[in-house]
Image (cartoon, rainbow, N blue to C red; front, top):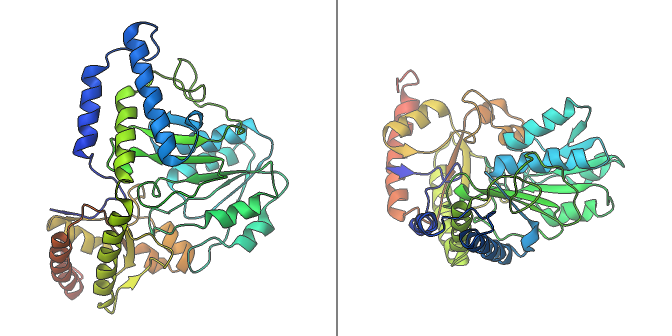
Length: 375
């Protein structure tokens, strides 16, 4: 098996699982209980939260635990807009469905949405952002690294524009940033991410919220670690998140250098095929390589039969949809319909890549030799 779909999800690190299992056995008390076991469990959560805050360079009170990035995105967008004045939202056409859906819901409640243009590099057009922002713009929500092309936005440039609008808040979906990049999020009001993208366990994520940001919770009732998200604190998942995050940034630059090498080798390999167009740009993170080829769906299905697992578009896209990111940048329907995503990790071995290239070549030639091939 060759797994090259790490941007969709990762498997839990063995040390993360060990932390989770140990916490399940050791801390029996409800963190909300006043007895010894509850107090002990609550302290473990407090210590873990402080550790997470130190890793991310934030304050511990800025952390809101959620079930994942989808909930965090919904809480950020709906919670902020409902709690603050203004009926205008700015976003991009590269956003994840968990950003698009809550914005669409707000539009049905009378909010207006504007889409900021993207340059050919994939970066947002800052001048266009300046031209569409209004006095009643309450939220700008822009993905930090998009899941299809892996384009890393210039957060500082966006913040420079928004500092002139104190009543407009900035949300960054950092789901594909955490563990892949260094985080430069100083000044960002709301940041969301999920543990399963960096070898954590599914079911735990965070919304980071600056102290001065007003937010209405989506879930009411029941004490928790914060008033913004009710429910019994999931101690085991919180401790596993802390472990996954600490491991993600351990020897980070060594991992980054290794992935850069894999990325360069794969791009050279893909460039040798005349009918393949690489969609990722110079601003894409090394973990993601997006390309378009003829008969992409059949090709990926044939790779799947050969136990090579990667994606067309993002994991949350419908099978017959276009790649939003490719379409937004290249304005080419065929290219967007036939896009393929390879997503790498520091656990991807050179041996796997070498074997992948061999299988890739065999499958590619087979599919393009006979377009009617059944897979």
